[in-house]
Image (cartoon, rainbow, N blue to C red; front, side, top):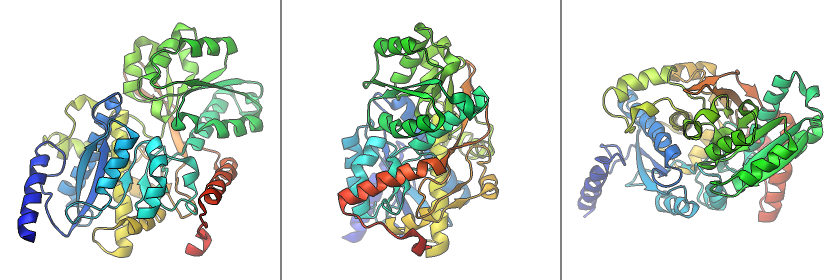
Length: 446
């Protein structure tokens, strides 16, 4: 009976593989690591999701086919189409948290701040790490209270800080920020509101005027907001939008006479999908880039040779290769694979469960030498996590749209983590009190 069931499951998975849902070798086996993918290839956010998931899948396929898996452990994955709908992402999590066909689930990519909020308690109860690079709930940076949530690379507070640091660089020093008017036009959601607290703190520290203007989802009409911006006469504007609200924001800003080179998009308002629909109005637009665009990095050479040129890429349109969202997928996949390697060094070269993968992420240390070895030098900054620090990096570059492509205009800019950390700890302590959580003693664990 068991063999019959395994053959049936294998046949079903192989049929899905023909459509790119799982790798062709997926079957009942003891040496496979399962990765659920809550994708959004259709709907309002498909222009972001299609290249994002292609980047992740291409890297996982590269690891399997070129490197033979992670120390011999093959990666298998299954997609759930969610249209970036929080309820559907939660359904995907519930469906796959127990693994697939005997392969355990190591972690869950939420890739959605609302979903990270919705799954916070479930992930902790199930001991499944929730991974949301440059997103998620900012206070989950504090792993003593949030053991199973990882807002990797650059949390929202860090994004606010890097943006202010860049403005200070452009203005000639932090002392030049005093009296400046800095407007944040933000998506009126948990994601968009995440930077309000750090911007208030940074405004108090540097003396600039902090003006916040919301845009309701989906943001197809923004005349009222940009009329308000024009009345303010800002020195700089942060665009913290998402999806269609970004190109609409760029075009409307231009219509109201706001200089495009005074607009700075955050991480989720800085892709080709954000600027190409805005046309000529986007030329000169800048954005934070913990995930830089470009296909000239070493990993792209390796992928082109082994995956794209071999006809094995998940990309249906090769022109997306090296675009920002494709690279976001690559970077997230690479960090996950390096975490699995870290866990295997401790637990053995075998599939890991969620608890073991939590330990692995908290001991992850991707230094400059390792970045070079895996082909991500310049594409990803060094990343070191711990029990107390689930962000790790806290840096981004700034890129500018020249009308055809993104051009990097800075090296890595570091967030002011020392200033931001007390604010994070206040919020994490409040969460712990609300939920009756006793924080871990991270010093004792190390």
